[in-house]
Image (cartoon, rainbow, N blue to C red; front, side):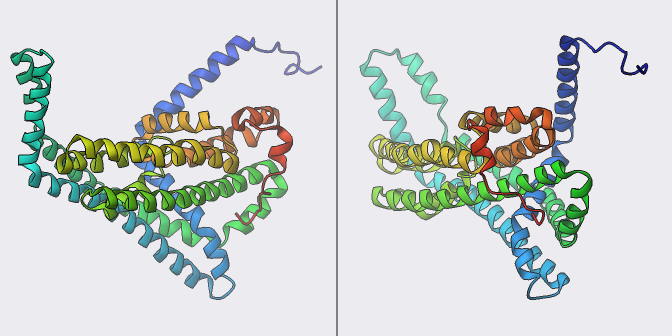
Length: 360
């Protein structure tokens, strides 16, 4: 027996501690490099999404032309998404000052209501002084400034998309060569690409449904700029589980200023009926079935990745979790037993999912 095989195995507790320490160091490294990793992974996701278009274009035009078309399409999507977010915040900031008188009237109504319930005048004044429309407008203005400050990251993303798309033409051939030596790694990468595209397709379809329903409802209720808030609902739908809460805030506040508490309550009730049912009940189940992640893990991934890499982590939570699953679980036969626990499915159901292809 060799000297290596005769060495005693490390105790399981030591292995757990070493693994935990490695995880802590890895997470700390991810947090420290979030400014680079977050836009880089966004560029990777966009490249993965555009790859089927690239494969289709390769049949009809030279490789350089297919790359150029994909780059233009992805650039347009990035710019449209960024403009939608900036315009939504800017429009909200410009609408608020027009409701200064209405805001003060709501404060007076609130103080009168509190006084009727026996609340002391000093306490009422403390509460009323904490509500300031100017402070809210200032906060939104600072948020808009921060969004504009992300332009530098936008250029970084555009550059990465350019290089990744140019390399995308040869990537399937490289995967085929790598499959001979590391078939599980190639299968995991392909499944990550398939899962990411399935997730974004499901999120886009449900986002369109929610956006149309919210726009119609807000138009009927009488909230200003209903189309804009429908667009915001579509964008925030890419944030799992809690996206609708972010999309609810502007129309609810405008409903309060435009028509009083009754309109605000109506907006909240309508959003809860439409968005909670669609986005927090139906959509997570469909997403889980599409990508092999349980509803609980989807929510935990949202919290974790937002904490690790910031706001982009909320948008990329599911793709990031799929990548972690591919690198940590799918490539290791000894860890395949974790897959049913992650997805809440039997192993037989997982095996009957969409086959991973090398051209992914």
